Image (cartoon, rainbow, N blue to C red; front, side):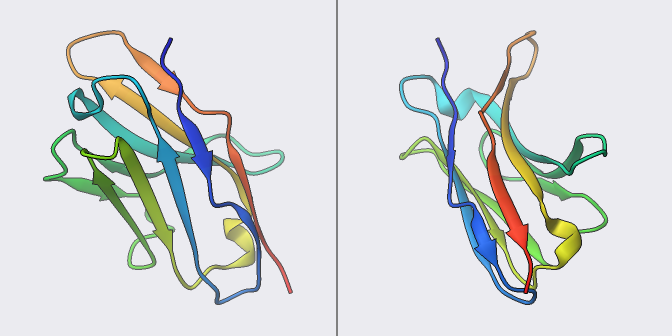
Length: 118
């Protein structure tokens, strides 16, 4: 059973920073493209950032470009989301997702709450 465990969420003031982590112990992490999604109350889940299995390519949602950075450490089976210049509209539950190309394997973490408020 694949488990994705997010951490690092919390309450931060506007303009502040947080770093989310998603650990994936016990599976072949370097075969999976990893993504971060978020879902705010009353809204659909949206893609925040994604990174390919080897880390060579990334993409970002338009609302976070220039503020968020996704990275991964395949030796630690962990993907990160560095979030800077946070805004109240970034408030959401952030989810980690793993997808293996060429398969139907698609895994989600339990989510971590990020709240941006003064």
